[in-house]
Length: 221
Image (cartoon, rainbow, N blue to C red; front, side, top):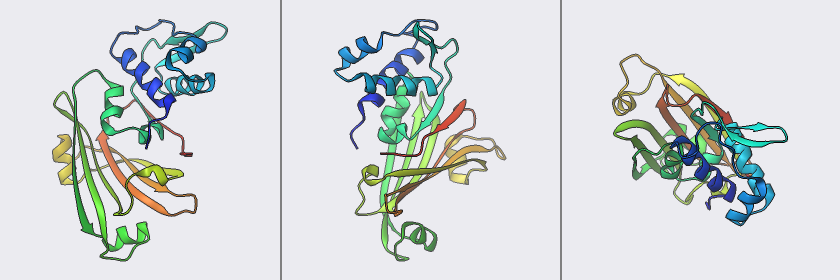
């Protein structure tokens, strides 16, 4: 799925803010200046700045403009991050070294997965395990399942997410290096088409201290 211009612009500013290039209290360029530099409309710029506001990276001062927040927090925002690769998502959050690895295989659908995806039990589906590391520290692990004829979430119109603190599976606990008994932040996702068909499901886990807050916006189109 092509990355929307407003997501790209917001990501660039997010990296500069979190990397210290744009210090707290610094005023961002005007809407017109950002639009001209990136060759986009004011509407695109407005959406980019709204995304930065929702992430807690900037603040709006009436009749003065947009300023870098005094204490930028790390906030996970949906569904904007679904329009990016995992590499781009985490690189937008930090200037540290990010490494992402994926394992992809085809497996027979269990009864639970078959029911969720509207397929026959035993039918082959794609299973993708994605692991992300920041400066050697594991920061995310996910399992994603979808029919083999689905390439990505470009056909999805809606995203449903359920957020909870859970005990990780042994494999996830080992990957995230959690202390036995510690909970992790888990996000369960369902990507749906306009007719209600589930085209992809994903289960993502993060260390509980990874994000200060989670922001959700469900319509993808």
